[in-house]
Image (cartoon, rainbow, N blue to C red; front, side, top):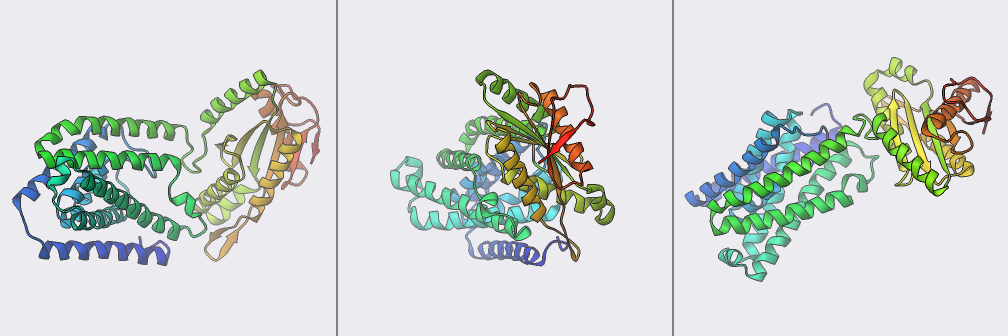
Length: 409
């Protein structure tokens, strides 16, 4: 952790310290009841069962979503704030030991963020809900307060993690570290589950046995979908991998052939990328790859199909793009990547790209022909000095390697 940026280290240490202080404060000032401890133990046992039930599926690397809030939220709503602070600790420990071992400080920070969010929700709920039995009876006001506290829990937890992510990478946009449509939908599902489990547990903790199977099934479905998405994704850049890109590109070409629409294909290659690896090392080279991938993705439409072909090569399919649009997009990519800078020690690394462009029905009628034509154009762009865009001059046979004439843009 100490190897991270200083503002990030200060923020993470402050977050964990605040969580520890809150635990000590509520542990020394609260009233202990055996019934609270038994309810807390039952909720943590359900969370542990969820983790063990999904352990064989594994978890995708990087950021993933689970439904463990179904057990953290009831601890915040039904029990004193101390239990909301403690709830993430055993479950994060289980995730680390039984599912995926990651950098320990990330688990600690996640526990602190979840705990502080749960503590805030717990304090608000107990201050405004009044009689907790009213929640169990189904009275409208306590249920609305519980929903509001669940929303508060989600907002605080997301904000704490988003600040950490933005501090780690100040160049990133806030919209990239906050909500998107998919995350918002999952947050709503977690909110509903948490409130329903709270009411169930409030009636009788033994009823958690009935709530557990549906939550396990939902979590397995969620993880299965994330693992499927991870199998389609290049781990370094987050773009489609070559196999997934081929499948989606084939689908788009069939659609374009059926509707008679235009379609363009770009092959993008980072110029002299080997020099970056040889000079600065492969870790910096990976940062350059990620930077180029993010720049390309940010300049494309939602329905454009972009993937990494391996090494320093990317491929882009542009549905409904003619030669003029393809040239315009390729030039925008070349210009934006050329202005990108990646920090390395005391230097700022800049790179350029060469782009080969092929147009459907002009340079080929299927994916293999278009790839061959774009590859030919890319080869010619590099011969002409790199950092430029080329189109092939003629239709390219599928089996032919680059070598015929090309026209630079």
